[in-house]
Image (cartoon, rainbow, N blue to C red; front, side, top):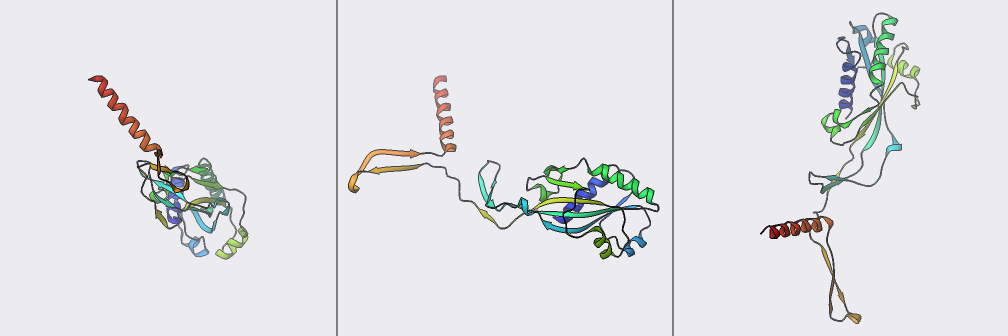
Length: 225
């Protein structure tokens, strides 16, 4: 799932204010060695933290339905993980870097929620939208200074980008076959006597609706004759 989130971010950044600029989007760690190797303007989107959003955790099971709206499998609700990216701009002058960060901010702000239809196949299959937060309040324990110190570089202006993504929980269980026939309860007399003639029946609403439609069609046919 993480590499698919990278694809989503690269598509968002390349299709907004940076469209047609030829500026690359990199996911490498912005170390001193990396900075020395670059020879063109670049937006660096470095994944520095992965942790579960426990407030979104759910219990129980979720039904998986087929095209006929029949439950065919059951699975556990997905677990949500918050992927935190450090977004920086790398050019020759601070002024150009600030302009580039402004373009990144203008590109990401309209995309607070990425719908499932715009996600890669495995993420889209969950049918869930993905929230995106840019330049929000920091909730992680580590500071930016600690991050840059670990990277061996100097502190630079940056945007904190967080993408909260669902991750499937396994395993999935096959559901039992759909009920197509109703249940009939026969009542017995007192002291376990012989069965009474009366019966109580229950039909699933799908079966009852189908039989009602069939009876209505038969009645229309009879009227036509």
